[in-house]
Image (cartoon, rainbow, N blue to C red; front, top):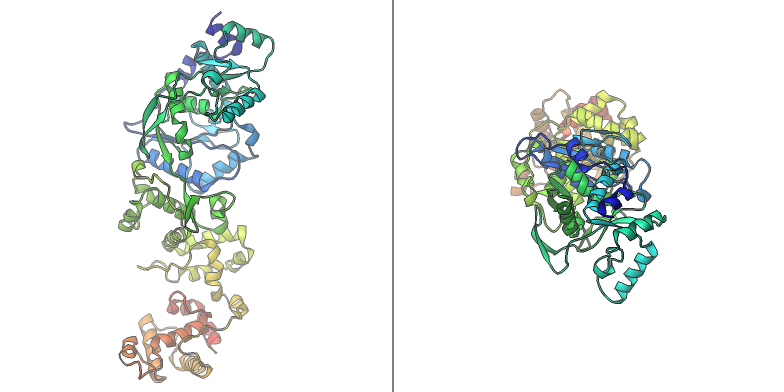
Length: 545
């Protein structure tokens, strides 16, 4: 009896691994092309950290004419949620991160290196597990979960490293004959990897992001095939990344400690290991302390939050690139109109310790992104968001022609308006342009320097009767407001007022504020001339009377 007999007993129908090596040949890609993947588990909502990983993976693949694929790691089926894959695929799509290959729905994939769903690759993993068994690099383990727990309890009591290794690996040295006999007797078993490592030896490794790191070798005999015949993550990812020809594994740095085991698996399977790039988690400032963004505490941890708030996908991606490479901000300043696709992301320039997620900064980026949109784009995005999340806003926007005029105010200028940071801001930002909303607003007028009723009434009456003409160009319009200020005894120029503050009670800017507040019930709005042009003569007169 030898290892081959044992391997045939356990996996009688498994193919030779040469079959899969031929089925999935080297990719025909240009020199230096990077192949990356995003490989989530369908276990719940998509985290912003996952989107961040996917964005980085797709970016480095695209900028080298490589391939980015979506693989679903669903070997832990107890934790799976319904429609989990659909949600992942849709979330990526919403952010314009479509994979070149991989899963496109719950059970369907595209590309020549599939299946891209681990639960559909069972026979492949079993072929490679059989290969390891044939070489004596894996073995059946008959320990029950209770026995494994007992081992752990003894280790903890003795204050030694927990795990299944060395003298604690009870089934490691069972003979082939005994193992076959126990299997034929119907005993339950799993397959473990027989680690050749020693904890007292070190391995040196170069991580693309973290730089040079060293670790103790792996000496744990990990489970590679579970009782249900499915592989563990560690085993499956090594085979998948080999057969799919992944060149760079980009993943969260919680996996950094698994590197010794993963490199060992690649080596023992006879594979060339990919390069590893471990991304530091996105952090949050919590009362002066840095902590990871949490699914429980932080709504912004869920990718769905951005759609609900109406933060454009483009703004989220811009901001994530900001976090990824500190050089992005300067690049964007120098290239305000270039597509972010043109920015070259460098993995070795990523933060080692974890970048802080700053919502204020994100909304600032979002304001800039929205400011560059046309009125038509702002309308379409606002309307699509409103149909889903705000029926009142959708109703306001029904008159598209008028809404386009409203959104067109101060748009397309050299310095466009930056008052909208997300679609959920739109209603608040434009409501004064709609009479029914304007009349509903019963808040006290926030008049400032000129605040006595008599002066306000006089300014408004004089303006409508003597100075307002909707056909005036902008310069004439403003000159007339200066004339009005002079007639009322206020300074026509702000600099005159500053030069002789004792001579005047107010200046032309304060007169403009009175007109603005009467018109909008606000002190801060886009260009007042343009607002008047959109409202038209009758509505301006009515609001000021």
